[in-house]
Image (cartoon, rainbow, N blue to C red; front, side, top):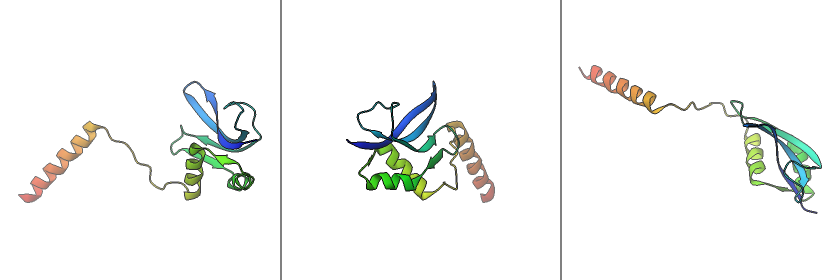
Length: 110
């Protein structure tokens, strides 16, 4: 029996959250699982990652394989939360800031 640690999708349409579960590789994505070892919510800012790293390590020692997505979550959970959240700026905002910097540079030269 091949055991995987993977994501199971829950939540309503366009509002997903995920449970990190240990499941037989042949069972459906949202079907029967052996144990829940964490949760992941990508919609919060910053993203919420709650994993029981001890249980995951225990299952890995028994031969369970991490999927790529869960491996990335485990790596992020081990590193800890990011201290700085990058805010994306629009092209217009970037252009305004560039003009303001240019005007300040010209004002400083005079």
